[in-house]
Amino acid sequence: MAVDRVRVAAVGLVALAAAGVWLVPGLDPLLGAVVLLLGGALAWLAWSGHGDRYLLLCTGEAFALGIGLALPVLAVLAQPFLAALAVGTGDRAALVAGGGAATLLAAGFVLAGETLLALLALVAALAAVAVTLAGLEAWAARRLAGGAA
Amino acid sequence: MRPTAWTGSVAAVAAVLGLVGLYLDAPPAAGAGAGLAGLLASMAVLFLVRTLRVADGIAVERTVERSLVRQGSPVGVETRVVLPASPGLEVSLADLPPASALHDPAGARISGGSAAYRVRLPLPGEVAFRGLRLTTADRFFTTGLDLTAPAFAGPSVTVLPAGQVHGEDLPGTGAGEMEREKRALLRGQGIRSYREFRSGDDPALIDWKLSAKYGRFFVREPTGSAGGPPFVVVDLPPCGAPGADALLSAAGDTVESVIRDHGSVSLLTVAGGDLVAFRPGEADLPALVRLLSPRDEDPAAPLFRVRDPVWLRRRMGAADRGATGPSHRLAAALRATLATPSRSPFEEEIERCLGSVEPGSVVVFTSGVGELSHLVLIGAAVRRTGRELRFRLPGAARATVAGLAPYARVEAI
View (cartoon, rainbow over the protein chains, first blue to last red):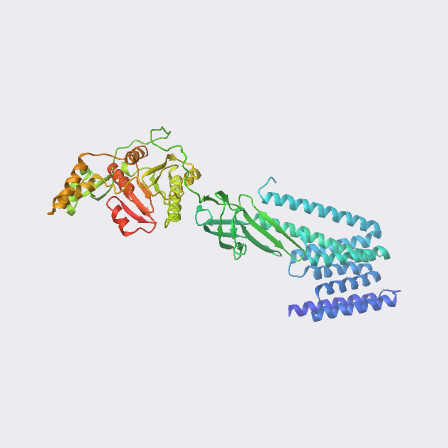
């Protein structure tokens, strides 16, 4: 029963988002058609259980892109669900951390509006995180090996 | 920390979305790509934190079958590990034996909180178990850490060389007097226990009251002969003698336990009728263990069918009571031998060694093969001092036990 509820919820949300896109005034019909097609594919993959997790993620991202082009806030709202596809629902702490980070960054990009600068800042931040993590891991390995911390 | 294939795939999607967003100047696309990148970064941080939490919470207990092993001999190891809970992480552990150890890596893997396997240590000296190898993995990252801090390492094992006894002059060889700083509690001699009279015991030690009660002679064992650490005598076995390894391992274990209980041990090694080394009051375990090696087979026996005077007198009495001519001639020969007492240098050295160690029991490790005269003389000398004596043999033959039983308790290793 729990699995059925998740499937139903996923299909319902996809249907709502696709329908919401059509309600945006002045929408390009082609974009609406693409969103509807992607939404249908995503809902079918989620309902049937067929399709690799990666296919689900890519389809989900394409759908989120489509609805985001119509209404940017929808793309931000889709991030937690995409995070669930990437992380899985078994690890609650990872889901909260991953979903939160994804939503915040997506919202930041939509609010910033300046794509190039925001991307450069993101790349620099990611590099800093990677270097910090590498240093932390080396320090921990030294400490656990009995060397000076 | 290494990314998994899944991480690479997600990063590829994030890169594509970012490029699409940059090319089309579409913040939603760039935002979706940034969201995925942020997700991966947060997963990396979470993975590292969880891994370090697991590593800090590991408790390990490792026991080795023996702390003294012969070079190349297998020794069993049992490792028990207590792991903290690790939600979201797959954790695997493997034991790290000494770097020179030969072992089956599959056996060293810890499953269900424990591992039991055997290692062979080919290099002599003191070696220690290094610690644990921790491997953690989740959907996004995997890493391996060597936990070799003192909390995860140990115990140490001393590997005895498989070589020969060296003919060098070691300190302590020979006899003499030495002073040692030690506080001693002076007490009078009390009675530790009573035992049955054995041929050769001092008649002054006979307890007449107990003897009258049970109809056989009992002697008192003074505490002076029981206090202090035991004096360990090792009759080094020839190379290839049956039970040589077991004998030397048992002797090494005894030396180690005496040092642990009393702080030092007196060790005498003999080879047939020759003294090899004497180390009174020694606390250096590795130095003592190096003395415990098999010797070369020596065809010349410096002592051959030597009997102690008590045995000779008993034999002479039996011969005197005989009715035949040859028995009378034997009695006369024995009488002449007893009339001119002489003591071998070996007996004198043994007595000097016994006199220079603390009063206490004596334990002799011997293979019990070949000529036993030196053991007979050791038994007689220890009996004269009134100390308790034990012979320890690996699988003693009946003839050997019969030859040594008049002097001491014979135990199997």
